[in-house]
Structures are given as structure tokens and as C-alpha cells.
Figure 1 (cartoon, rainbow, N blue to C red):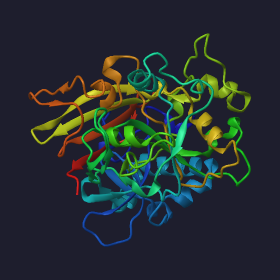
Figure 2: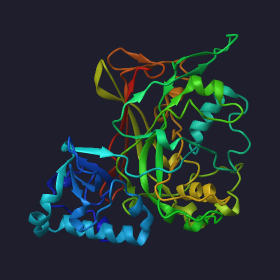
Figure 3: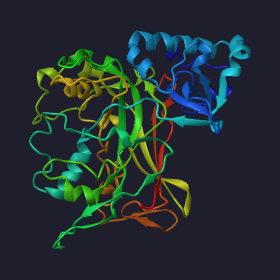
Figure 4: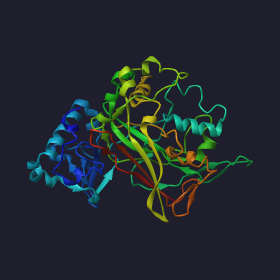
Length: 416
């Protein structure tokens, strides 16, 4: 850590000094924006309080994505962070740089990177146990779970930025007592509370990434909602896994919180019990085991047409991920798979060990059997048209300034 993490550091952008805000000067996440209603080309910016500082202020013209910045690597990211911190903390810079500020409420936000490939993992052990119990009560976790980070290759083209509508998918479903499947809109639409890892420099094809260097391959973290049509998924997933029940939409938050900003919030890897094996050598690093995970508070809120004030459904924490980000990256590249700047890796649903820490409707309602009661008298077994799901994330630790991720939200639209 360095001076950019000083909890006493203040910005001349007054809104950045609100302790309840997501974007103090100790955060400085990157995104892509343009003026709302404008026709100019989207460009890179950094969130500071309720404003966006155009990166052109420091001579950086990213173009419509952050892929080139992601490819630049940690020394460049660290130097840029220090420069931005100095620009935004020194009061005498107010006059010179104020013209580069755009209020967030007057900005349109875009996907921060062009995503070439997207993989979703299954690192939330409590989610894996809960889902497994519904389908395999006597054997909820398959034998490979404790040995290998499970994942599937998703559809990068249907990853959308927070705020984009999510159209209810149609597909084949089959009731247990039905003689044949039918085609129609999904009736069991679900959210998944996840964290996304945006890849930085990447690796050459055929060249694995050592676990000790894997975290340096991560540009930053985002919130991520890998929407799921559980009824379509249940009928199609055997024998090859997720397909159309997943590929209709996945929502990404617009701000990439950098690894530098997350330095104060490292925590130990998930503690393994005595009967759980240690990771194989290519996934085992002492430094990563000691502090390779992150203490990120995660929340899910639901707003309906009749409930305008969002209601919190769940509160979990990324520390419940069974595998660290470095282990996920190292495993993805272990067979020689080449990761490229802007690639996205999803954590999978991060549920906690208690009933109020479940990261999907599948778990919250026990597969739809016990609908969630909302404050206005409504109930939900799964998501309905008009529902808005909002994911939020925040890091807080004594002695450091808290930072947030901004909202990751999507509204369900009727099937077409």
C-alpha cells in the first residue's frame, strides 16, 4: 500500500468525502462513459464521488473501451492511480481540472471493456452445497469439487452493462410428470450474486500462468449477475452443462475496482476442514493462501412495480469463495488457454452459510417451494416481469476508507 490508501486523504470533489459513498479518492475505479444524450464517442473515466473525471484530463485517451489500459499491466495501473490521486487531492488543481468533470446523473455508462471471452465458475461452496442438496440430497458436492475450480464457457456477446433491460428468455422446459417438453417463456427466472474478474495483460497460447503471478493478471473486480432460467437449465444441462438457460443475458457493473484499490481488503483463502484436500501444487501458494481472497460485502436488493423502494433479499461476502481469484486465473490458464485483455471470469454464486446470505432465488425459496415475502404483501418464488434486481458491493475495514462498487442492476422485460 502507499499514500493513495491514506484514510485521511480528501478530494477537492466534495461528494467524494462522504463516508457513505462508493467512490472516495481511495477507490478511483475505471469505466467508459459519455454525456447522456450526446453523440460523442464513449471514452474512459474515473469515478470520484458523484462525478466522473474524463481521463483526457491526464492525457489518456482510451477510446471506447479500457482494453488497452487493461493490457498495460500493474506498474502502469499503479502509476496512473498515483497521478489521479494527486490530481484529485490537491486543492490548487480544482480550477484546472473541474472542466473535465461530468456529473454521473448526466452520464451514460457502457461496458468498461470489450469482452472477448467469458468463463463462469462455481466457487461459492455454500451455493454449490445448497443447489446440490436439491438434486442429490445424499451427495450434494460431486467428488471433484474440492479439487478443481469448476467452470463453463459462457456467451460474451450477451454480457450487458448495468441498467440494460433483461428480456425473459424462452426455451424448452419439461415438467417431471409431462410426457414431452414444451417451448415458451421461462417461469423460473433467477439472479446470481457474483463477482467478476477482468483480465489484464493475459498470457500466450500454450503458456500457463503460475499461481504466484496470477493475481497480477487481474485488472480489477466488478459486480456480476449471471441471470439463470432454472427451468430451461434443468432440462438442457445434461450432459454438456449450461447453455440457453444462461446465455440470454449477464449483467456487469460499469466500474472496474482495481486491485490497487482493494489492497487494504485482502483476507485469507477459504478455510478448509480436515477432510478437505489441500489444493494441488499448481494451485497452492503460501502468500495466496494467507491473503489472496477479498473481504467484500455483497448484497441483493429487489424492486417491483408495486414496491418502489428496494428491499434487501440477501447479504453475503466474497470471502465465502472456495477458490481465490488467483487460483481461478491459474486454473483457467493451466492447460495453456490464452487469456486476453478484457476477458471476464465470473466467480459463480457467492452464498454464505446462513439463511439471510443466499445468492439466488433458487436457494432463498428452496426451488420455489417457499416464496419470499416482501414488505408490501407480495411474494416471489422466482422473478416476475417488471422486477429489478440490484447487486451492491462494499469493502470496509477499520483504519481504512470504505470503498464501493456501484450498482449492478437489471429490470426484467416480458418475453418476446
